[in-house]
Length: 432
Image (tube, rainbow, N blue to C red; front, top):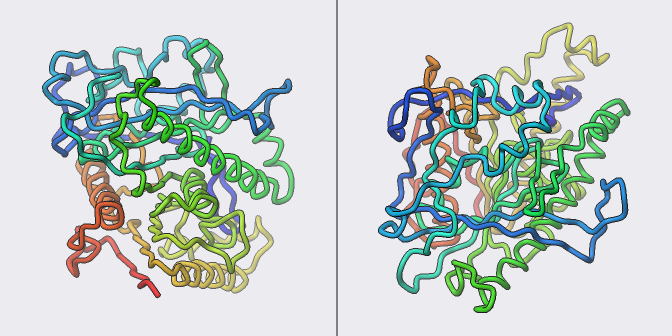
């Protein structure tokens, strides 16, 4: 599930999905389709089950240490992958499927419809493929998923980023993903009972989100340490051995994962650039754990679409019934919005390395879920053209941000006066 941070209007919803047709992989008509990666590298992936013995598992019904799944996506040898079968879209989903209720299954794929495992899209990912030849070292990006979303629901985004020469460490955060499947067969589902219980308390979800962001940020810090050890240690036989540029590490995430990415930058100085894909808290802040006068020092990019939207006409025009339900007058609501706008802008302007805010809500059909595959999977939908375009716009800015700060490219679209799409509003906050 997904918790939407929205001033005084808390909404619980399930991540959904829509469609795409053009620029897609050729597949049988019955299969869902994703856009093909646009970079020059093939995409490899390997996985690790990691246990942090220094931390207890707070949500386990019995005493346990914190365990996470980490999926490392890396540039692969295109010639070698031509002889390898692509990885499945949702690995081990045949084992997970019997444990999901009909409503949970519908929620994962809505509004597209899951019919069978072989209806899922063919990926451009190759498990344990040889890394791209040569000695080039690649920047590393940590990625955190949104509440209720397995990391695989970001396949299109992660494939595309990796194809442009990045290593992505996608962390599956147990109890915050719809499911986390471990190699030993252990399956952990989303902590729905805890979530529902917190939702019944005044400000309960705000407190619970803050708690989970701390956990996810610590997961990311631990995962980075472990994966860098794999990259340094020949006896561990990681396919990315000696190929990580340890001085060029970034982090990004979607929804609550965006808040976790921001927190990771606060707690881990190894991270050099940070991105939040559409999330802030009830104060208008993407830094949910800390006071408003504390941000981070690294360059930062915030997307504003729905969950982090304090700016579109839709936000400042709730219905009279909505306001009455919250016991608020319209002047009170407008004052709250303006306060949150000021908080967000002040925080972004206060980041010493500079920051960006990209408002994409004016693009038709661009919604919170446009950062996932869920708006790309139903290739029969009438809005498939908009969904593909929206995906491409967000990808262009995402790559530009990390190219600028981790590959040190001075000529990205973030440095150009011409927007990718004139409906996308880019706010720049210079370094100081």
